[in-house]
Image (cartoon, rainbow, N blue to C red; front, side):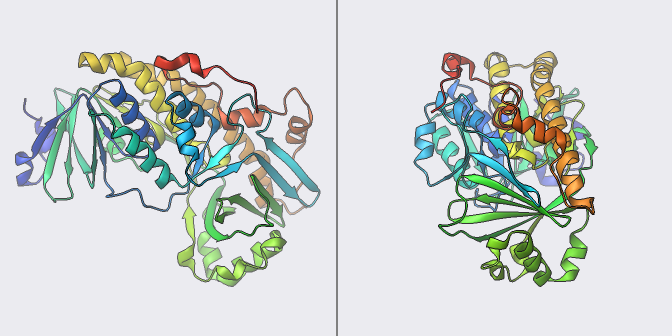
Length: 431
């Protein structure tokens, strides 16, 4: 087979000499979705190439949460116990501190699952763990330093990709299906000409780390709202992850005010941090997340499927992005495994993945928008002392509905199961 002219016209002269490999499925992006999908396909005996542009996983990730839904999937695979052997923290509740008092907004204790908590684990360690497990299967092939730059197309169908390897040479992978798991700035989405519908949440988040002390709150996330500011505190076990929430586009003004202004604001909003805010000495210690929310109207083209952040970008509300990316991967493996074994995946089969996953995605994004309107917008814009809106006070006080936020964050609208071990997915009594 030969590549289409459109796929080669922008490539350099040496691209025609690319080394060509073949597999059953080519996955681009070794984040949670790509790694989980590759593992699940390999255990079905489906030859899978996983291409990752970075040379390792040792990066400063912000998404370090592993939700009960993901832990249940790992339990189906017999991996949950081994994962828990790694140093980690647990998040069992989310509390909101306002001038009017403290409210437990989310309580995971009552969930009917073996894992009534969110595991706090650096994503780099999680990906290393999954990669190690995937390498047990001969059909899994991980290529680091593989920078995908081209789609290979024939008669309008995607039949592979071309990438620059860490040897600076061009390589080509041919497969009946290419799956883009390459994140919110997806190269494959751009190459395929697919455009997401975006919304503009009212916030950005300035992330930083401070040391953790034995007397700090344990196993819970803390939200502090006061004086038009909002601070999120998550325990990572050996340090605190601090999210300083600001109005959209407000970072330049914050930086112009100086690092001391940020130190002072943190100490005023969260008094028990006052003894360590001076650990923040330079803006290099700060990472800014420009928050957005988006969703593709169409997740696929013939021979190409996008999942995870490549198909739908979540805001940080509830930390559900990783959870949903892994759910996408599970459903993709469930639905497309048989077709990949046959050697060809139809457009209808690709569309089935979107049909199954789009409704949960829409629901959770609506849930995030509701929480942003009810809490974030008022917290950052109101001149009056912040009070938790009546609707949320009602939800958290009525026994019949108080666990809805916890279930949405833990599982979304529905649980997902690996089909070949679906019997193990039944809810179990909480412990």
